[in-house]
Each structure stands twice: as C-alpha cells, then as structure tokens.
Image 1: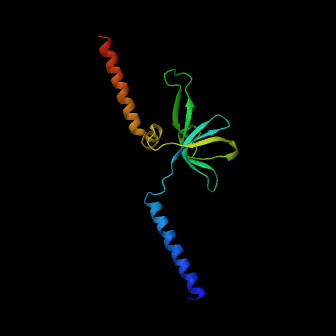
Image 2: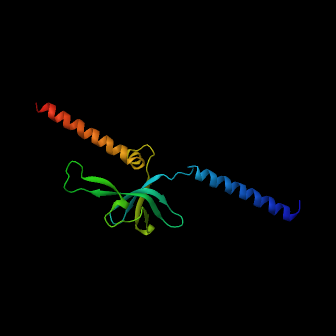
Image 3: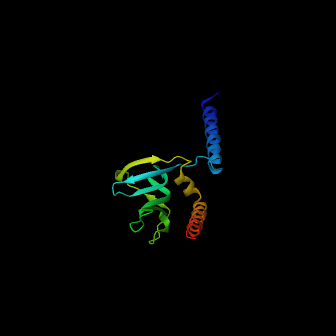
Length: 139
C-alpha cells in the first residue's frame, strides 16, 4: 500500500467517525449535565456548563433571595426572564468562579429545570390541598 492510499484510507476513517459522532449528537446524545456555579460575587447560578471555547452557562437559572418571604427565603428564576432581557446564555470569567459542581440527574432541581410547568402544577395542587385542609380545620 503506497503512502497516498494510506492517507486516503485514514481520511475516510476519520470522516466516517466524525459523521457518526455528529449523527449521535443530533439524536440527543452528549446531553450536558446541569451544574451549580458559585461566583466570587456570592451569586449562585445553575445551568449547563461549558468550557469550550470559553466558560459559559446555557439554560441558566439563578438563586434569588426573597427577604419578604420568611417561609421560602430563596427562590429559583430563569436568567432570561430578568427585566433587562438577557439571552439564555451567560459567559463567565473563570477567574470569578469559586467552585462548581455537577447536579445529580435525579435531583429535585434538575427535574424542575427540565419541566418547570409540572412543578408549577404540583405547587398549585399543594396550595389547594393546604387551603382545603385549613378550611376544614376551621369548621
């Protein structure tokens, strides 16, 4: 086998592998895990962390403090729903990251991130159940 044939064979093999990877990725493979990112500013963000080509989060959620609510002093909200209208991607200067951790795929937060409308329905159901319980005990 001469040198040109070896180069052509190697090129074909690389292209076949690359094509397979692209097909797998488009069919839902390589799903990014959710991570928590704690910043030097004290902010805690959740999302899909990527380090290439630069550190960024997509599908971003943030932890917010609710000073007026003693029952639930913290809440989670979508980053792109902020009043100033950001995109759902946050580029991060890696020098400002204190720590990061991946969230377990079966954690309550990840389930909420993947289906927030189901959590809203469940919360409404719990609220109506609590309301029914409080009215029945007041009778």
